[in-house]
Image (cartoon, rainbow, N blue to C red; front, side):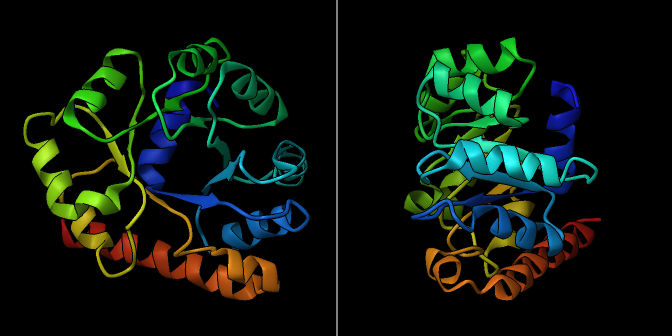
Length: 218
């Protein structure tokens, strides 16, 4: 997929599952469990030991599927480069790091830097962000996202943190481009306990909730 195809894929699928764990041993299995539940965009965070190896393994196993793997928690250009070479198709950061955006674009990948205030969001957009990860969205909640979108309607936002099954439909109705979901979908306790079937069921619930929310909008 080229950059524009990946961006369109993220928008169409609407959910980025964020996989964060204390160990990388079961990370590939978690990616597969989330995929089995119907979520097609999956982000492996660099805060997990062995994340690059997980990306390589997951990319190889899912190469024939329609899963779009990304990398998260990227803070520098070299990490972005290594992750892309390992199989990441998009790069996500909790902060605005211009070098990360530049490197992602050099390799033909979208970049979703993190920002929170309107000034930060606009600065990220001006720096070349393809979408802006609003983080932590839990701090301002739905009302904050609505308030930010009012003066900045053309900047595609991806609220992350605080989005769950109870408020997903409201975020969708607010006009966000996608949502990021981590612990509410694949929490560290489930990963540590090896409850992959439960992770798959959680993913299925989120995928279904998104479809229902979008259908209700017409």
